[in-house]
Length: 73
Image (tube, rainbow, N blue to C red):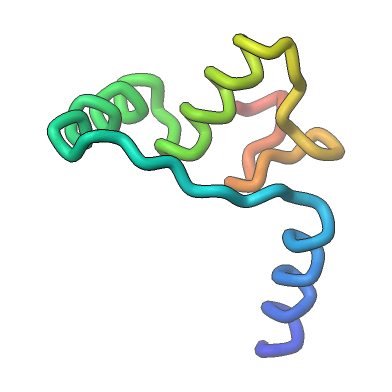
């Protein structure tokens, strides 16, 4: 099992740019609610908004880090 997780971690490290974003704590629930209303995680919401704003396809090989394919996202 550890080998499998190591492979996943190695793949993610090679293929994804991970960063953190700080926003005022007062907006936490608003952001979480906006993501929930769209049926996505906060991470996916941020990627969707960045993709739209910058004209980027923030999926990799048709798979978003959360595991949804383009077809069922």
